[in-house]
Length: 500
Image (cartoon, rainbow, N blue to C red; front, side, top):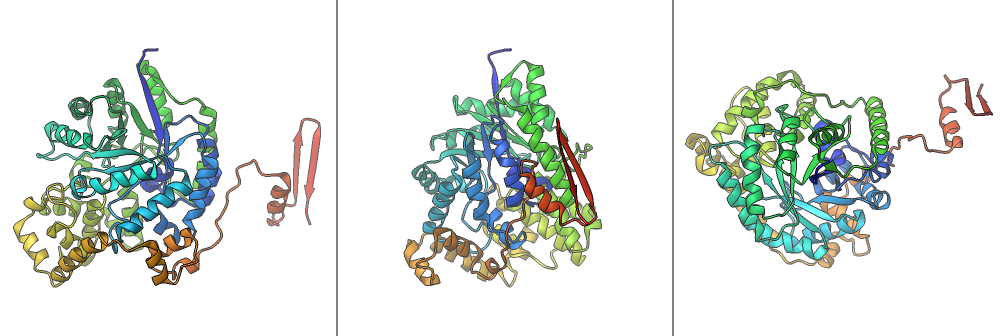
């Protein structure tokens, strides 16, 4: 083997489930696999512990997300853990004061045992507006800092653009930098010049590659990146790998071996155990299994990220227009042009996809305009990368003359005031009547803006891993009256179970 070495990290729990299972990731699923994942030897494990995951758990899964956060700290003890820090606590809903943002991330880091955080750097003006605040916050909490350079193809995003962005990031002294390809739009030709441009300005800071499978170039891009000396590649374990998700850890290891490059994975048996349990869960819950996709040149037009496409399909089905997916994708292409070719990544990608679905469902383009599109035209979510200077003038005028535009603009100004508010956590607790509540209960109340949905939480569902005691197996078998007899034998020991 050569002196080269590549590190592999895992994002099955967060981006794998987001890409393929529409964020359907429960406590029981985490409990079934995370202890074994800790034995694999990953560089780090990406955790689903941001405010979006919390809302998903409460609103749709009826689970308390703090249970999973505690579980990660309890069962992932060898491997470093990563969490995302987003622009504000509630992302695209009501803003929160910075004291709440700081309180949440300090709490989630302590509860989950997270060691690192990552944050997008060239969307929503975060580099200028949020990094000077968020990076010191994370450092105070004790987290390593890994900013994401978000790739998307456009006439503006040249190698020089990304090199300059890397140079600007370096003043924040990152511990590593991600090249984040959320849409799976990198090609081998592009990465041959792009990665060296970033490496040159990074000056030895480790570079992670985070790329999805939408274009089907994923495996080849990973190979080319390893040839160029990328330091870390993000992977998933089947059935949460491939498709619109990330490259399979098996494929990544195989190709590293072919290239003569060493890696950090030491326990393949643990991966196989996790794979078997995930496949069993997928079958039980009727969840899709990641499979290689056929090449679709359309991904370079609609640019929908891998983590958004599964949610789009789910939501179209809920609206009863699942059969109109192709129409929605075509509409996305038109809206991207109308909006000045913005970067298709959170939250802009969700905005455009949602507006496309509305356009198709109403049968008329922009008959109904979502508030988030008006916010985008106002510059709420950034300027150049949001496409604002290049928006179609007629579309921009339509958005800014909308009856909601004035109130949205006023709301944006109030948002900035709220974010800069130095209200204390104690005062906020008192305003909710939660002076004596636990930190976790208070924070969940703040995230959900009340306890209406929290009152509907149920005990988490569990999945059997095969390690449970025999008495538990018999108890569960007793619930199935179709099973009348079971015989177990190991060596000379023989057990016969019967029920009437």
